[in-house]
Image (cartoon, rainbow, N blue to C red; front, side, top):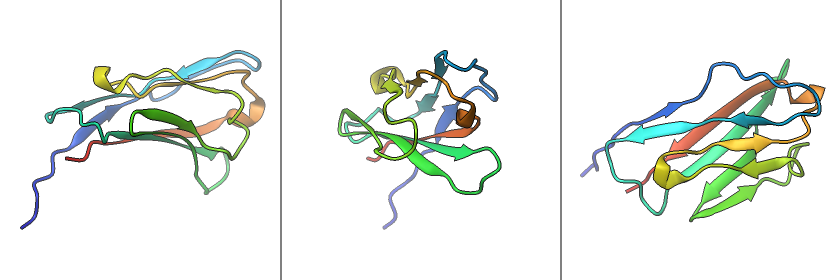
Length: 111
């Protein structure tokens, strides 16, 4: 049989502004009718302005945050979320002009 699937609703601000050299919080909150499992995972992707490719920049899994070892964010990123509070937010420090683009928060809450 097929196991039932419940949607997770993910909420992020449409636009976030920051100035070069400052820090910005990328908020990601989510809601699920199911309890938050120990296997919850949160992944942040970045697509630079004017490009088609998206790269994974951050991953939370098995209760631990992992900053992906690619891109210019690896030294400037901080986990600010708390999955038990339905929060998957991250902070990017020392903003650079190349940080302009689309950030996507993806949440999975497997049974």
